[in-house]
Image 1 (spheres, rainbow, N blue to C red):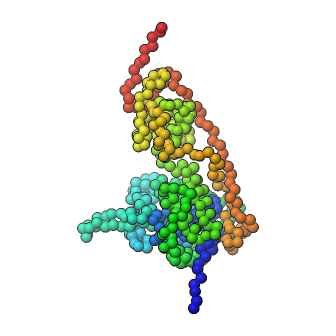
Image 2: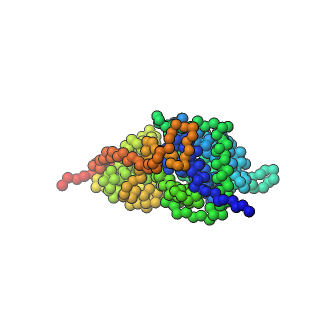
Image 3: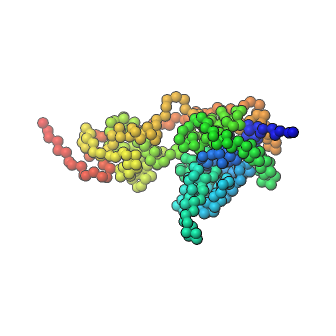
Length: 437
């Protein structure tokens, strides 16, 4: 009687890692690990409560995003790739007990520019499908009955520029870049190389399919919280199942890629405004209150912030009030040493700052991604057919330090009453008559 030898999960992930580094140059070692784990997680969809998205974005053409999507297609579970699809077609494709892995290339043409409003239903589908048991409900006129259509499925999107922030908030985001001189990869041919990728996909399916119950019950310790933890948990669970070096590498990828997403400004306009108002108070000397006029001067005067582009005169008092009102922050009439004006107290922001944009803790910052890195793993990544050799030492995790940003110029304090601004909602200022003694 023969017994089947248990699959070596770490070895299978190493083989997948080797395929990725053979055909694509990714921006960091952590990005390679994250993509490998995401591909593996597609083969265990029945075990997950959340289906993380994979966003492959690039600043320009010829950065390898489509080639990476080719490799993902070759190795993932039941791929369904498209460059354009109607929401109805996607609903029907996903609506099964064993949904495909949805792959969308040229996603920037779907969600960008004039097409954004027309594809709002597709964006809503991708957002809802991140969590299990969030079906779309449609009325079937033929049967005169409500129809519930499942939306849960793993999905990868590739495009130039950022995807909608609601999608990136539910995604593992990989920022591709053009290959530098000296960085070489093997050419990919679907007919020639596809069978080898599908063989890895079959090994992944057999390994993970035999451990679905373990994966479904897994609650791995996570270095992040809330939605980020929901998104990354399937990848970390796969890494823990594989064992070896993968658990530590998975958590390193979580920390580095989520930090990169936070530092790249992947936040909403309102949260960005909260953070910039805090900076404005600092520029003003952290007074207990500041007039709307002074806050607008600081916000619109920041050349790297978006506020100066909010209309012909930049961000206005009314727009400022509308954005902050969502956080329960409103302006009030405040008596300053030189007179009364509409403004905001600093204490009104304290709770929102702590909840939505807490100040970074003191200590060493997470280093930035290096210009280049050896993304192969010695002893595991076979690079036959390329002219890149496998290094004899482990991949370096060293990174450069962040460049310092010059402090913004100070905004002058209020000096005369006729300099006090309003937010467009208070009554005209009354002339103050001063009497000589």
